[in-house]
Structure formats: structure tokens, C-alpha cells
Length: 454
Ligand code: ADP
Image (cartoon, rainbow, N blue to C red; front, side, top):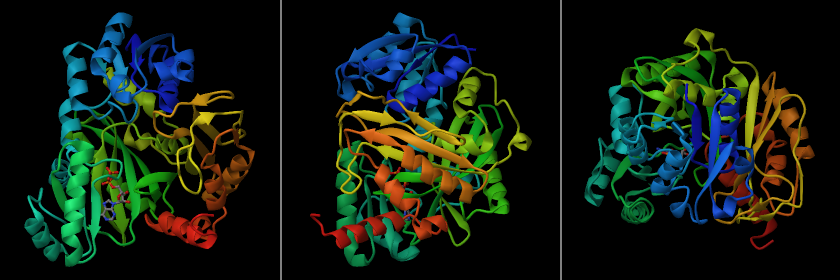
């Protein structure tokens, strides 16, 4: 097992990883920017190293500094969390060259899945159902038009290097195609420095269903069921739950089995998430994330399995601690992403937390790194915490979520808590009837009702 793990991240996920290390008896090193000197992960780690000024490119994305921090502290492994360097193949390679383990898959697998065109080809080869569309990239608008005519409108133009919902444009008719193509290309170039595009059939009312997997790096994989992440704003997840209200046991074990076998035959190592759109009973692969996801606690709640502990074990060559037969699903879990944002305009709301009181009680988990008096720096993501609630069934879970949201106090800044208080009592949400467009529609309806400036 590793002796000391450096956590190359910040915020709630740095704390999450730190907790797993402590429970395994592994020493921890926190790295931080000058803006995060007072951060919780810095306070709780055994050692900490300042790696640069506030902008992420100078600190949390600064590979030479992180490598130097490994050398100074003698860390023998790095956990990248999510975001930042977690899907950077070069980072994984550089660590390996310096005899520091990267807690995640091989650089090769990160690279394949990081290129969505490659990822889709690989998925198809492994027997995973994909969204109909171009067989690889489309070089220009004429090629895109040809594919669109074949698969039928509407279509989605997507960036091969895409992430965070960027570089993605819908063309509903042939007339809309030139604009969609040009905008997607410009956005892809600006955001990723790579303007390779591909075309996909745009599904009208799908749900976003993702399968959590673990691979042992040899030839076997297990799946831990699905999470339903259909409630999204600008293609970003807002609320995640498991099991999905629309997936039955048969569908779960069928798609789970396909994904676990695929991960096994790839020789994939560590945790990963295979994302699908689900419509009319069919699954369509969209991408694979080769890291821990923000919403992993949903799976932990319903399976009782510590995913970070498994990631560390696998990276240390100890394999997965259980087999597929041992995986059982109990009850229902929902996660709400608490952002430091205005709940109506979604404008960032950094600042000092004047009052903080997280909810507690049976079945309630809060993953957050904030505290009373903490000043949220304006340099990073607006996610400040996650509320995860577990109940014996969805009804109990929803009632528990309602009361947990009532208890939650974060004063001094604006947060998305009021949005969740509305969602948890919404009839359609209570009934589990929503697709990936539901939240956007709801938000624009309430803006219209309240007046755009109100
Ligand atoms: P990113 O990596 O930018 O998050 P994804 O490919 O994972 O991009 O897609 C993000 C979201 O965009 C999905 O959850 C879904 O809401 C929407 N989306 C992606 N592909 C399609 C499609 N073919 N049809 C309809 N919606 C899609």
C-alpha cells in the first residue's frame, strides 16, 4: 500500500480523498494556491505545500510544482480528484516517469476517452450501443450536412475534445447547420484548442443515465449500477439520483453487464463512468469519464462501497475488494449540488460565509469544505458542497431531502439551496418524470412568470 498520498485538488473533493486516506492509515499531503491557505483540506492534511498564486493554471494545473511537492514530501502517489489534472494523460505519464503512482487509469485510456470520437469508436468496438451519427470526425460543413441528412434532423454538432457542455450546438433544420457548425467550431477552438467536430443525432427527450464502473487493470470489471443525472442546466448536472426512476432491474443488469465486460476487456484500471442517453428503452453511449465523478456519493449511498478506497487499492495493485455478486442496491439516494450562485440568475456569489449550519440526522451526508467565517475565493468553480440523502425508498428519500434542505443554513452568500427547495416539492420531480430539458424549461418559465428583471 502507499505510504503517502498527495492530493492534487482543492475544496470538497480534496477533503473527500483525504478522509479515505486517513481511514486506510495513509499519510496525506495537501497542495494549495495562495488563495487557499485557510482551506479545510490544508488544515486537515498531515503536510501541505503552497504551489503557486490563485489562478489555477499557476497552481492546481502547474505540473512542475506538483511534481516538486511530491519530491519534497516523499509522496508515492497522487490522487487528482475531478477536474484540474484528473483527465490529463501527460500528467499521468510524467508522474509515472518519476515513479509516483497516478491514482487513475493509464495515460493511454485517458487519451482514448478524452477524444470523444476515439471514445465512441472504442465503445462501439466493445459492443456498447452508441448515438447514431458520423463515423468519426467531420472535416467541414458539407460532410456534416451529408451525415445530418442520413441520420435525420435535429442533429448535434459536438467537439471531439468537449467537456463541461462546451462546443456543442444543435441544428434543427438544414438551414441552421452552417451557423451551428461555425459556432461549435469556434467554441471548440477557443475552449480546447482543438476544433475537431463530429455529428450526432439529437435526441428529443432522453434521460442522462450513467453507469459507475471499476476496472482492476487486468481483465475484469464490475458495475455499481446507474445514476440518473437528467436534471441539468446548460448541460451541467444539478441533481443526481440513484437508482433511476425509469430503469428496472433487467435494464440495469443488462447495460451494467455490457459496461463491466467492456471495461474488463479494455484492461481499464480504477473508477470510471460510462455516460448514456436513455430514450424509449434504449441506451446510447455519449462519453466515458476516466475519473471519480462529483456525484459518486449517490452510488456509495446505495451500495455501501467507498469508491475512493477502491481507487486507491486498485492503483496500489490490490485489485477490487469485492466481486459483482457482492454488489447489492439498497434504497434510494439523491445528491444536490450546492453552488455559491444566485438561485435565479446563477451569477457567481463568492464572499464570506457569515453563518453555516449543515443538516444532519439519519441518511444525511454533507460533503463540503466550507465553514463559518470561510471566505469563498472568486478564482475557482462555484461548487461549495453536496447534500446527499439516502432513504429506504424514493418517497422516504424525498421527504428526508425536504427536511435536510429546511435545516441547511448558509448565510452571507447566495446559494442554490432555494432552487432545490422548489424542486423537491415539484409534482413532476416527485413523480420522477423529467428529462434532460426539464430544468431549463422550468427555469425559463419561472423567469417569464417573474419578469426578466424581477
Ligand atoms: P460534456 O463532456 O461537455 O459534458 P456530453 O457528451 O457528456 O458533453 O453531454 C452533456 C449533455 O449534453 C448530456 O448529458 C445531454 O444533456 C446533452 N447531450 C449530449 N449529447 C446529446 C445528444 N446526442 N442528444 C441530446 N442531448 C445530448
